[in-house]
Image 1: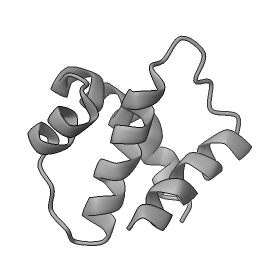
Image 2: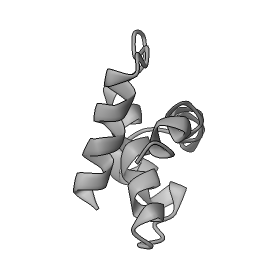
Image 3: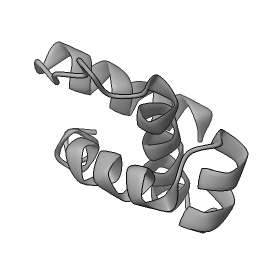
Image 4: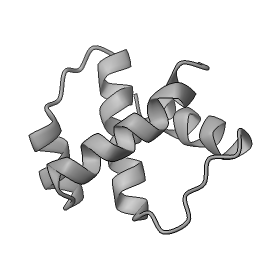
Length: 73
């Protein structure tokens, strides 16, 4: 599923995702969260945000930002 998270970020970058001013940890956490859902690992937002040391709110915001790029997989 790590490969899925990497592909999500790559798709976002190639499609012009503007990450300026956004914490890279939040973007990575969101990609991991989305990737875990795609791979049916079912990690919670709380679990991933704690591991990535970002707030759950930040994680949710970045998930919203990256979701459209996950649909490109």
